[in-house]
Amino acid sequence: MFPEIFQDQLFDSIDYNAQTFEKVEYFNCEFVRCHFSNAHLGQVDFVECTFKECNFTLTSMQGTGLKKCQFTNCKLMGLDFSVCNDFLFTVHFVECQLDYSSFFAKKMKKTFFDGCSLKEVDFTEADLSAAIFRNSNLYGAMFDRTILEKADFRSSVNYTIDLDANHVKKTKFTLLDSAGLLHKYPIELF
Image (cartoon, rainbow, N blue to C red):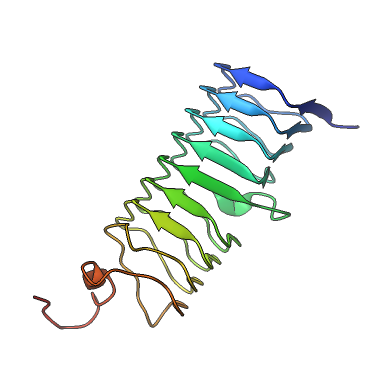
């Protein structure tokens, strides 16, 4: 069965809540104020799509293709991005809520997080080389065996990163927030 294909279309204020999608491909489409909560997107490929003010809370992403997709002001809480299709997986997030989501073992080089809430997000074993965390809150985010080479945390807050358990070559931090890097050592910072 061939997939249904949509190209260069706008989808505005559509409620996909709890729906299961058949094989569908979206190319250069824009989704505005759409609700994907509890939907099953396993047979969907999104290529160069933008999502604005959409709600993806607890959406099933098993096998979903996200290729050069941008999310702006979206609610993506509790999503397991680790089960998305790895082929050309590229995402960028601006002012999004990603709390309690997982990017376990995802290759996410040069991913951009701008003004995002990333509370308790799991980045274990992810490749975040050259990723930018701009003005984002990383309270409780988990970094373990994570590749953070050339990643930029300079304007983000509340991160705790074990320098011995992660690859941090040329990673950018501010001196002001260095307490989150030295948390495991029995020292006092003033």
